[in-house]
Length: 468
Image (cartoon, helix red, strand yellow):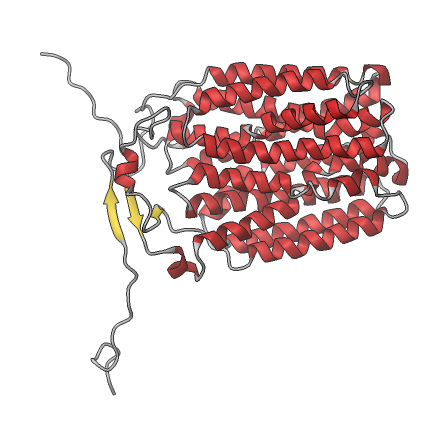
């Protein structure tokens, strides 16, 4: 009997892999290719992730457009109809850190997490259309749908970030862009074409579409190996030497070190919370405000679609721009523009041409949507790439606070204030984005710290000797 390693049985080929270190001591594992590891090139991994993210984005960007139909079909008040969406934003935002830890332990493949999330989102849509009970909608849409959308969105973002370490910012921005843009073709039908009688059928059809696209997007998806770098990409050692508006960080901060490094991380939390509050207020309240202001459904649909399109395009553009220019300055400028657009949007909701509402909603969506890829890029630029996904998961979880303020504030406004005062909520949303812009301008790259012992293999700067 021949040995498996005899000349007749050549040893199995070992994929080429090269371990390199940059000038700061960070390690990279160059190769093998994504096709060798997964059977598909990186472009296919990205395309599947974009499909899955686009499928579930309608649960966020389409809910506000459906509020008038939910009110008519289930007999809820406008404020009560926002409660399932409020819980959805809390769960979808807050689950980011837990989902990252689960993925990092590799207890489940990324594809299984994405497909499970799509199944939960489909179930949430079915419950929303079939049940007239508010408690069932809160549990079904809010809890199940929020957890499902979080599974898909965060898994796709971490997945793409791992396979594209050379272009992490722009590819992660593409995931966020797909999350928003995927709902744009459906929003006119949701806002203007869904009658109360057809709500169960419409929700079931949408659930089937979300499930099919989500399962297809998660098929065969696996996370990249730790510290993987694609062969054929620019040398990571040369990338680490790059200089520009946002050069690579000097070291990789742990979670504990990031919290004590000059206040940058708390500021990022505040920026995401305030910007998210402004954007989520628009998604929750703008359709109701336009209908109350006398605009027909045919005029409401373009404004809602413009906000979602602006959010998606803003994420795409911000991810690309962040690779070439100062991220902090761009973030502050875009949030300032969103603040002005939201403040100006208060007038067209009650009077004025619908075209003004469309243009202002487009600008407001672009400004608030760009916050997510830019804060992720700033997180990596400030704290390093090794723990970027985990630290940004903490930053993104501040969206739950934004949902509580934005969607909760919209529900409170609709329940307690007279309709004539409802547009003032947009002025408040603009003020929140204005504060976020000011805080973004205060962000500064932290210096390396030594207050917390770093794990083995993490570079820390040497102590300087006192002059003799």
